[in-house]
Amino acid sequence: MKIKLGLLYGGKSAEHKVSLQTAKAVIKALDLSKYEIHPIYITENGEWVRGAQLQGPVEDVKQLQLKEDGATISPVALNTEIFPVPSGSVEKSQQSQEKMDVVFPLLHGPNGEDGTVQGLLELMNIPYVGNGVLASAAGMDKVMMKNIYAQAGIKQAKYVWYIRSEWEKDAESAYKNVEEKLGYPCFVKPANLGSSVGISKAKDRESLVKAFEEAFEYDRKIIIEEGIDGREVEIAVLGNEDPQCSVVGEIVPKTDFYDYKAKYEDGDTGLVIPADITDAEYEEIKRVAIQSFKALDCSGLVRADFFLTKDSEVLMNEVNTMPGFTPFSMFPMLWEESGVPYSQLIEKLVALGVERHEEKQKIKYTF
Image 1 (cartoon, rainbow, N blue to C red):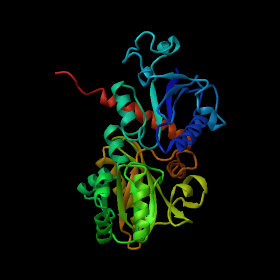
Image 2 (cartoon, helix red, strand yellow):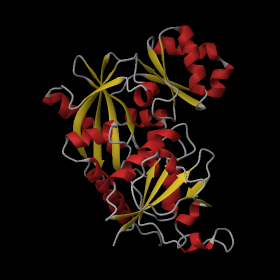
Image 3 (cartoon, one colour):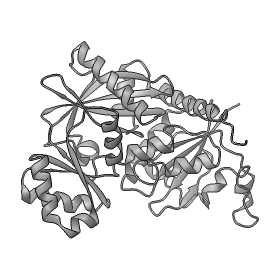
Image 4 (tube, rainbow, N blue to C red):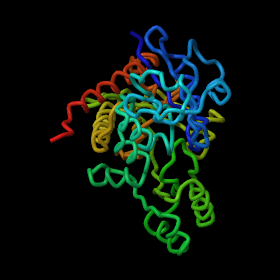
């Protein structure tokens, strides 16, 4: 029996286009003898569109935007057994479609990677790939994540944060606080976005003011982090109760820092896999990555990002609970170097999603 795999992609997020690239790559890598693929496109306005079952690989990202060929659905139509659909609310063809065996949310950023979609799938009792509600929400919000890691005793760069209303009331105090506690250079980021969207490096007061303004265009809450003089290294973590780590990779930006253009448009970044580090440095990075994974109660996958200083000090930067997932993204490349090819990695993640769901079924909900 083929596994009925629902693929959620697109999404109401600034990272919509990144998600389309991810979906295309995953579809091309899936073994159609094992999986029955059901694509579900979420538009930038939040509309859910279900396409016909895919019979072969998709060559063009535009084919994944199923507005013309697909039918608009309510998210609850994913599982009509759990949420019976009222007569007349959707077409009969949608009412009769069988429940998904597992869903792979190929979504990046808010409204997809932040626990919202994960919560919907939990309510419908559908197995899904990746992190649960708590880890997804905390991992998406950089302030909450860093607060949790501080409580867990994980070493990090110094940081401060603001919500828009605080900044609007007294911007001057905000700028002075950053200068006194962090100094220059520092990095200003939206608290709830990934893919380096809205991030700026501030070197003086003028650039700090501009960085605040830009970051607040993307979120009501921003975080400001001290600049660290160190190498940017990353490690991939895979698993549920017993997480395993890949080799370590290093990011070598050719620009001032690893921004959105360097990641997705210019290709203006060097990736060194495996990174040139000592055995002791690798063991410490691996230890902290697993500690971080467990501190957020993660499951399935994360990419853990660190700074490695000249004194071999390992500082946690952040974890990404749904990292870039094309074959040329860091997470899959790290596992490729570790002996797990892309197609096998996808299968492992699907299996981990099912495993986690089965574990949760052991919970007694009635008394």
